[in-house]
Length: 236
Length: 235
Image (cartoon, rainbow over all chains, first blue to last red; front, side, top):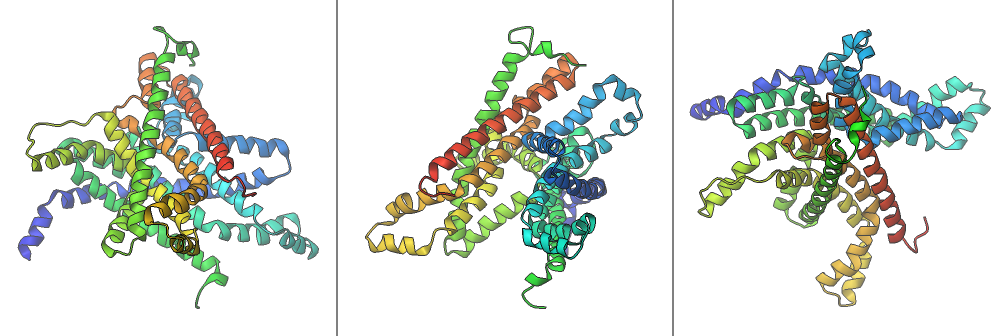
C-alpha cells in the first residue's frame, strides 16, 4: 500500500497536477470578471435586440451575427495583436489594459459570451406568453417594473439550462487565452510539456482540473435551476 | 495600419495563399465532420445498445471530451498521438519512427471533438422515432439492415439536420484551433502573413471575414437541405 502511494507521489501526473493547479487561480480570475459582466451585458443586449427601435435592434443583431460567425481565437487575436497595432490606441489610456494579455482575454471572452448570451436571453424573452405581460399591464405595472418583476424573472429561469451550457463553454474557452502568453492552466500545461517532453501527463493533469471546474459549474447551474424553478421540483 | 493592397493574388500579395488556406479549412472541416459523424454513430450505438460496458465507455468519452477545452484535446492528440500510433505499431512488430502528418492529426482531433456533439444530436433524433414504427417494420418482415436504412435513417436525418447544422458551425470554428499544430489554414495563414507584413489587423480581419462567409454560406446550404428533407412536413 505504502509502495503504491509512493509510486503515485513520484508519478509525473501527480507532480504536474500541483503545477497546473497553480494556474487555476488565473483561470478562475478570467471567469470571475468576464462571466458576471457578460451576464449583465447579455441581458441589456437582449432587451435592445427585442426593442422596437429598429436601428438599435439591427445593430445588436449584426453584432451577434459577426461574433457568432467567427471563431473565438480570431477575436482574441484581433484584440491582443490587432488593437495593439493601432497607433492611437497605443497612445491612449486603453493601452494600460490592452497591453496585458489578461485584460485582452477578459475583453475577448466578455464580447464573445455577450453575443451568445444575448441570443439565449432573447429566446427566453420572446417565449413569454403575451397574456402574462397583458395581465401585468392591467394590474398597473409600469414598463420598468413589468420588466423587473415579470419578464426578466420568467425569461431567465426558462433559459437557465441553455445559459448553463454557455457557462460551461466559457470555462473551456478560457484555455484559448493561453495563446496570448497568459499563464493559466493550459499555458502551464504547455510549459510543462516543453520542459519534460511528457505531453500526455501534462495535459491529463490539466484535463482533470478542467473537468472538476466544469463539474462545479454544472452543480451551480443545477442549484440555480432548483432554486428558481420551484414549480418544477419533483418533491419538496 | 491597414495594408489591404497586400491581399492581391500573385507574388506581391497573400490572396492566393489565403485561398489555399480557406480550402484547407474547408477540407479539414469536411473530413473531420465526416469522421465525427461516423464516430458519433458508433457512440450512439454504444449508448442505446443494452450493454453496460459499451454504455459506460461511450458516456465516459462524451463527458470527458465535452468537459475539457478543445485546445487541450488538440494538444493531447498532436503531441501524444505519435506515441500512441508508434506503440500500436510496435505490437504489430514495426519498430521504426512514424510521424503522422498535420492534416491527419488535425482531422482526428477535430473529429473526436465534433463526434461528441453530433452523438447527442443523433441520439435525440433516434429517440424521437416511435417504437411502433420499428415494430411495424418488423411485423412486415423487414430485417435489421433494411429497418436501419429504410425506416430509421431517413427519419434520423430529417430530425437531426438542424442540430447537425449547428455542429457543423462549431466544427468549422474549431478548426481555427488547429493552427497551433502548424497546419496552414486560415488562422495560421493570417498569423504568418501578419508577421511578415507587420500588419496583424489587416490579416486578422481578413480571417474573420473568411470565417464569417464560410459560416454564412454553409448556414444557407443547411437551410436548403432542411427544407428539402422535410418535404411533406409543413412546419
